[in-house]
Image (cartoon, rainbow, N blue to C red; front, side, top):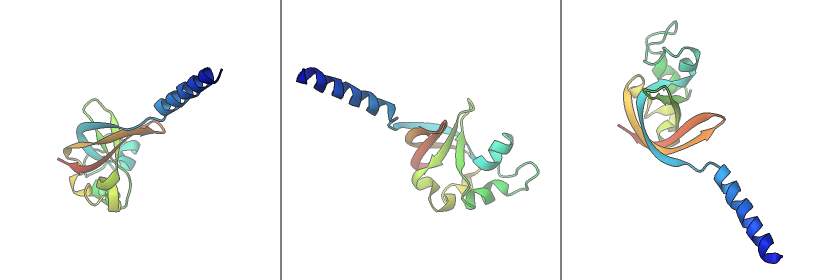
Length: 120
């Protein structure tokens, strides 16, 4: 009886670890966007935004709004980690550009997140 109980506990623990959603390392390429304005209008993919001005994307990024990568197939990844530190200081100059980012990908609340330290 003890061995069966131990095996059952191990099986439950393994299933729980699988459901935790450990991050996978991945490289994604796409357009770097200010996610706040992109969610309002998915045509806001550059620095100039509809009804918002010519420097909206960079301004929003510097204010600390989330920045994301929109891939060619429409998948959106919010950039987190070192790249997004200090109110997106490393990202804001590249808003509207096509970039490649590598990092750990996870999901939170239905949103894909990529934690990265460098972009190309």
